[in-house]
Image (cartoon, rainbow, N blue to C red; front, side, top):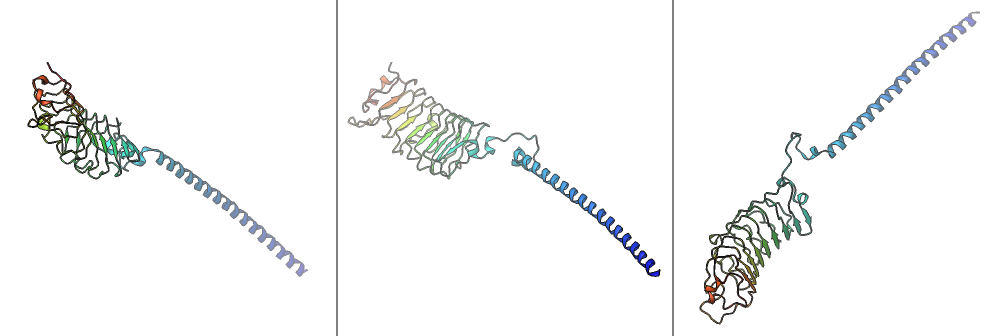
Length: 289
């Protein structure tokens, strides 16, 4: 009898222990699943937020601004932007024509630039540093700007420069020009004789075209023997001499290259100076009466 009672007691104790262990396991498993689910939700929410933030940052303009910049700050000017973002850059050529926002100075150019066009902007000044390291330049066109000042030496290092246009600006004084220049255009400026040195073109042994029309010149500067086309119309030239185009002390001298001289729109009466054109193939275009 005692053995039967002892067996029943141990059976009850074992059953109770099994039930208690099972309950604890179930309770722990439930919490584990809840923890895993919560962690997954936090992870995916965090990842989602990071993804949205990343896209927003890179798509917004603020990624290019300093961290403390105001949101309503004014838009940048042309001078603040990289040249090849503002202009069209091709191999060896840079086109900055009618740039918006306004371009008020010469931009930094790639060192291999050979052809630079910056027409119809609002560039006001050419400095000695603008083209200092761009020794590959062959053509510069700055037509239609607001240039009133060109520093000495602005073009002095451009040994390969062949064409230079400064037309339609407000220039009153010419700088030293490159010796190998072939074509020079300064039409529609404010040049007076005192702003153009008498020998400004004398040492330019390849110069073929000079355009100085629509200025305020009172006299004709010295013209190299190589020049073929000379435009001086609509200035204030009132007289010429025997040495202006020819050599007054040499009646046999012929100027073979000069094909076209325009002096119309000047107060000079060319018929009063017949010995001034004896070396030319054709008479200058202008007023003879």
